[in-house]
Every structure is written in C-alpha cells, then in structure tokens.
Amino acid sequence: MPTRILFTGGTGKAGRHALPWLFNQGYQILNFDLQPFAHPTIPSLVGDVTDGAQVFNAMTSHFGLDGLKAGKAPGPVDAVVHFAAIPRILMQPDNETFRVNVLGTYNVIEAAMKLGIRKVVIASSETTYGVCFAEGDKDFHQFPLEEDYDVDPMDSYGLSKVVNERTARAFAARFQGDIYALRIANVIEPHEYGRFPGFVADPPSRKRNAWSYVDARDLAQIVHLCLQKDGLGFQVFNAVNDTITADQPTAQFLARWCPNVRVTRPFVGNEAPLSNRKAREVLGFKEQHNWRDEIKRIAPGAG
Image (cartoon, one colour):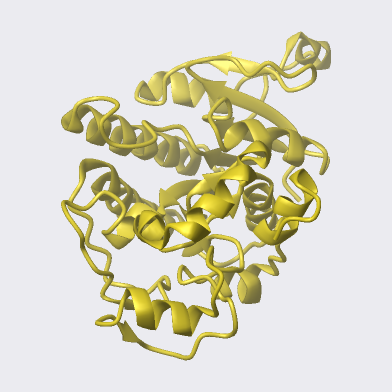
C-alpha cells in the first residue's frame, strides 16, 4: 500500500474534500499547489506544476521539518495524484488553459516515471465526451457514456484532457507503470445539494453534464481505490455517482430529452448516463452519497 502521496491541486474544489478523506484512510499527504490548503495536519508546498524542476523537487521533498529527524534526504513519494489544472474554459485564454493543463500533466507523469514512482492518478474530465463546453446544442454520440467512447471535445479544456490521457498511456507503456485517468463528472460539494431540485425541474440545464455528477467525497473514494489497485497499466475510469439527476427512469428520460441518440445497452433503473460500471466492477466503487439521500439530509422531508 502506498503511504506517502504527493497530491497536486489539493486546494481546489475537489481536492479540499479529497485530501481530508484520504488522510483519514492513513495516507501521509503533501499538497502541491499555487495556494496552500488550510488544514491542521496536511502540509502544503507552494509551487507550479508547469515548472518541471519544482515538480521533481516536490516528489522528493520532506513533508515537514519533522522529516529532518531521519538524518537522510527524502526519497521519492510512493504515488502521485495529479488534480492541478486550470479547471475550465473562460478563466484564462484558451492557449494558456491548454498550455498549463498539458505541460503540467506531462511534467508530473514524466517526473514520477523517471523517479521510479509507478502509481499515478490523474484528473481527466467529462468534458472529453464533447458536449459540456460545445458550441450550441450538441448531442452525445450514444448512451451510456463509457470509457471506449470516441471522445471529441471542441474546447481547449476538454482537448487538454484528451492529450493528457494520451500522455499517460505513452508513459505507462514505456515505463510499465500504472497510470489511471479519472474522467471526473461535475463535482458536487456537500453544501451544493440544495441545487438538485432545480436540476430536476429544468432537465435541459444538465444536458452538458449528461445528467450526472460526482460527490467530492465519493471522488476521494475512487482515488483511494485507484491507489490500492495495482497492475492495470494505463486505464481510464469514469468518476461519477450511480444515478441520473432526474425524476424518471433513465431510459424513459433519455427517450424524451435525447430521442435521436443511440442507446448501446439497456439502462438499469436510474443508472447515470455517464456510466460508472467500470469503476464499480474493476475498482469496487460503492457510492456513499446519493443525491436523493443528501437532499433529505439538508432538508428533511424533501425528495
């Protein structure tokens, strides 16, 4: 079991929930980000993943001053989780989004592989499926969205994630490492479940996210399962919760709202259109935060 983890981008929306969750599983974690994470027991190293030397140093750093007591320089970490990125389009110019996300991921994977770190988990995205940041109303090619889908984004962010998956595949083959790319759905924090009645009431508003989501804490569980699962080489996993954000069974809902999209296999009940079947079957993922239960938690009697 890997114990010492470098987590890039842990100060972001997903990371600030994943870090404490993983810490509670017994991992020692160093957060590497442009801004520190305010946590009493998880240290941060401020740095930039687009600088390869900083990435190399972060992977071979003490996690704190206590490390000096060992009397020897630190070796590489056991595993790397790479979430650092510009998180969507229209925050920085398109070329900068592409540069930061692609170069940062290349630097992280290259440093890890050349340092002998054979487990890397990277954040890919639902945007690779091509609809989230598409121009206009674009249909998906087929349902469910599974990992063998012909990804075709037209935006700089989604494109950067497709390139990152190819980078991961290349390095995993060259160095015989395990590099798992998570196509992360729309991340929902615990306080955001109050938005779900609005999602259900306005189905078109969630088409770009394929009427799917991932709870930030369940995403942390998927990262944990990836860290525990060895020997798969390069893999892509949809990181998503189990059920559609709608008040109808999935097959019936999609027949109404996406009547021209081919369905390649039957849906089971309220199964999310962005399928987590592979994560369940290969990693053993079991969601802990279903949106209907979470709505009841924040508003008893609802749902």
